[in-house]
Image (cartoon, rainbow, N blue to C red; front, side):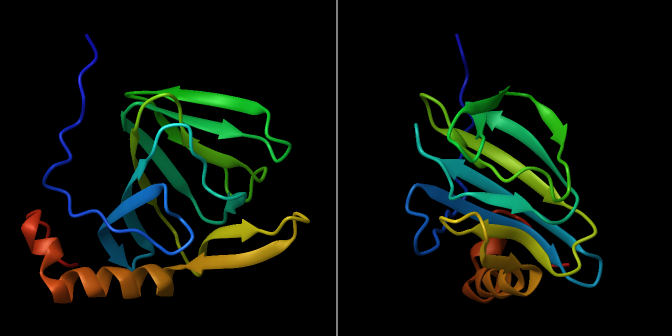
Length: 155
């Protein structure tokens, strides 16, 4: 019988335009270029088309993480327990969950500016999400006491 990851202590947040994806930032250290985030993807949903612009790895804690090519065809399924180092500036893709909710830890290393580059309908650059953006979200978690509720300490 499959087990589920108990995320009841994680104070999830959302970004405008990403209604089916929740996140929690465990660490953002711009000086060291480290960003650690856990994402929760609703079933059968996908993030907008994007590419990763810094070194990263994923660890699937619950469900499965699905990757889709820009044309929408399924490229890869990473089941629970999968640990994969991603390709910097690889093929643009959509990612999200399969039939059940997915919880995935993303570790980013060597971040110097942009972490994700979201692409427009024409495939061209549309919206970068950088370490400064994540730092602002992280700082808000610290200021609100949210980070302390999970026992994490700011860097």
